Image (cartoon, rainbow, N blue to C red):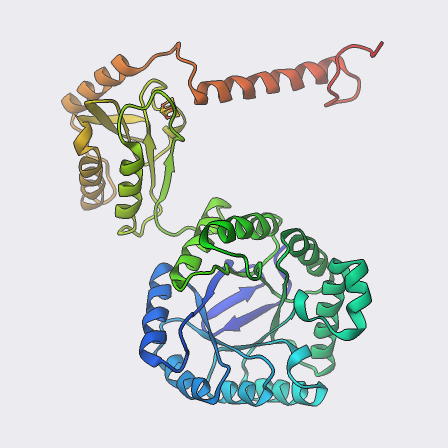
Length: 414
Ligand code: SF4
């Protein structure tokens, strides 16, 4: 269920059924305008909808005005501890200000920031962090960390409502993936405001991407979450954006750029597929359309599960073939597979998204495929298909034989 309420961060709607927005945070010193703007342009190009910048000093808030003016995407000012900086960031035109009301210096200071946000019409992101819950929730945090996090978030929401402010989204950050999932599920049931999702301090590009994919992917698959940030220990913020997009694309929540599918390879492989897949992935970065491209390590299985791909290649030791939507296009030498694949993709776009097929070349490719196909080989794909068929058959038998649909036994237990 999308959040009931929606806020707008600059031009980007968050919540209320809007597409899940991708955000990231710059890693530069914000006051270093050249470095910060260069990074903002890189993340925008990678697909960030919104960018957040840290504003810990006066010189950062001074730079903020220029950043907001020059940034191609809306800018969120990230403020901790100092409510004066929050006021200045709102005056500087930030499209949103992120703060944790619990660490901004007390109720009067929170009220001052809210009054200013209302006056300038700027939304806030308010949140709580598992590492800094208020003192009265310490025991609850010990007994039930999820409930403690949710209680802190609900108290923050109630504080905003008492101040008659509703233009905000909410975040609850935890380093624990299970707690992130459980707490956001609970919070989504309790409040109507948009949720910002993230696993805080997730880790390196490898482990952090996996943790985020599991934590955020689970929530997003449930329809929970309106904007996401992948926190990775890298100076290259665009990497966070790429991971966020892969999660959204995998869940079919948003489309951006091509989708590459590739077999996992096995002992039937006869060419350097590692390099081929890496090269295809690199060259696909130049394309914006959401075409699906498949790379198969061999043709023993025919085109198998890659039948629906817009374009694909499969190869053997000396030759391979290019196909589109399950139909062969032509046979090519293995060393030219990647170049010829992209030549076909470019022809397709030049022809107004039409696959150009030469019947003689296609027939040669079909003959090559027939030679290389082996209907008797036990490929991973065929094994998976057989297992799936067997499982379906078992369920059907169980459902026929048992009075209780879906039960796993067909005989009365002894
Ligand atoms: S049998 Fe399947 S997994 Fe193995 S190389 Fe061929 S396509 Fe890839």
